[in-house]
Image (cartoon, rainbow, N blue to C red; front, side, top):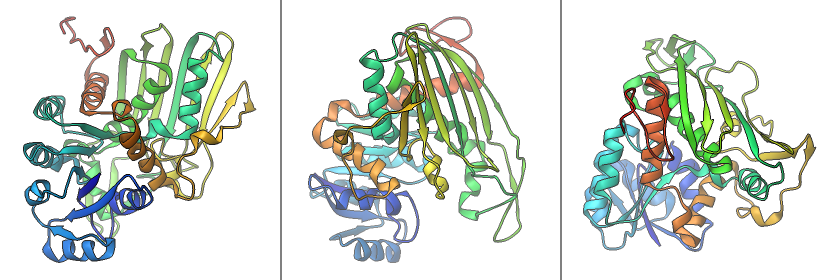
Length: 362
């Protein structure tokens, strides 16, 4: 499958750290085109990544006959326009999470893409530890699930000075804060392991309102929440609770406890010097049953030799190639956007996939 990446900076970004190393090790894919907003950068990216085509126009990249899959790796605010360009060209599209700035925009993109295959960058569900935990739950190793508890913290914003390139993530209208990014990955991981969430209530807060850009000292207006507490329940009746937290001054990390009538599974990120390793969409996880460390079978380790960031994305690409019907789609993204919107504004109580307003209307 021939791939074109929009947002493939040769200097910094998720495409550089994850997508391109992942694609390089997968024989099922070939990176053939890159696009950035500036001609010099686009040409430099093509040279650095060894690809034949460089574009400053996402439209030209999407329309090129050698591109079969368009990958969107820019800021969330740019997703909708670029996804529309790919869909209009009849190309399959892989868009990073979050898909959109709002539920309405996500629904519009899902509907617009009805004629092509869509994939959303929710790679955390394919971590070996997560997949193994899912298999254990499905096999009944802990009996009927009764309680699910998740804690995930990041060190982002733990200091008053923050890098200038991250400043936009503190703006609630940018769609790239804790609630949207970590919240979506968290809910997707929980549902993948334990089943759909049927009820959800959230309480977001801002605990670190005072940041400045480290390069200039310019103050950052913080409007995006840096914590959210979630409480609810799964369709099978199990209780669910989560605490997500930016600004962790200690060791960040992720821990998921799934308790059942016959035991508890604990899925936990390994302590690493790399703070990225704590994030649940990137981390490698250990799995314990009633405190006993379980050996994750080698069949779940499908990306040997890759670092954490490209390995997590490579597993999603592998699933696109081998089982595209088992990959998070734009429909998956719409469901997460609805859950998060409900958690920020009001509780839900519904059948799987349905979100109700306060009056109980779908």
